[in-house]
Amino acid sequence: MVSRDLIIDMHDIVKIYKTGRIELKALHGIDLQVEEGEFIAIMGPSGSGKSTLMNIIGCLDIPTSGSYKLEGTEISTLSENQLAIIRNRRLGFVFQIYNLLPRASALQNVELPLIYSGRINSTKRTRRALEVLDLVNLRNWASHKPSELSGGQSQRIAIARALVNDPAIILADEPTGNLDYKSGLEIMEIFQKLNDDGKTIVLVTHEEYIADHARRKVRLFDGKIAKEETISNRVFAKEELEALA
Image 1 (cartoon, one colour):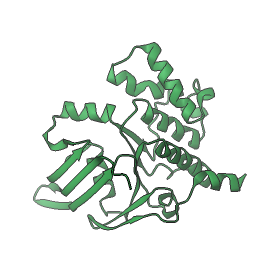
Image 2 (spheres, helix red, strand yellow):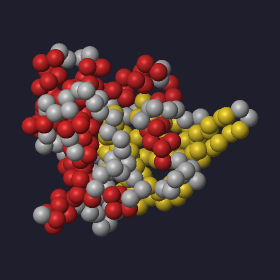
Image 3 (cartoon, rainbow, N blue to C red):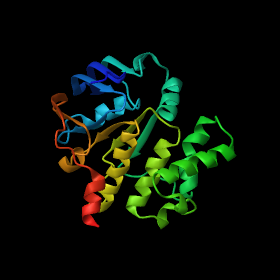
């Protein structure tokens, strides 16, 4: 097996939330390593720490203690401005609720991260946004607003937006939670293709059949990693969709 670089390297991650004198320990010493090009699914019951762990991976929160290195950089040493740059340029977020701007077109929604980064002009922004809309098969819907899109189409727009800055990692939090079975499979087909092309994907889900599309499962319980397993009988969304046709 070829050794790849660690893109996520966590050691003894603890997260404590304080409300007055009350302390809630959400994570109890998490050790997690993810190699470049992996596709992992994080699972666990409500309250197990999935969202807290995802927020720390996504640099939306920092641990109370422990070490988190993202692409070799210790996150706890960075300023809020530096974290914001990482979130914009190195991480792509896909949520259960699509978070699209209702009055903006699909194209304008996808362009947003490029506008925030301020690195390229409007012509190049539009060209890049159309490229990623092609990846999710929605270029012909570029001028449509979210109200004119189905749930599955809206999530594909959200994926295109997450991809537009060519991030190192795609973080997907319950991305199929609001979708019907077929639309969910279409989203998983996109994720599997992106992973086949080398993109690192970290997905949170409570659905076992969705997790089976990943390459590895990480199960949390009570703020700890209870089990890690390589998926031996991996499910392929493309085959499932062909069977439905």
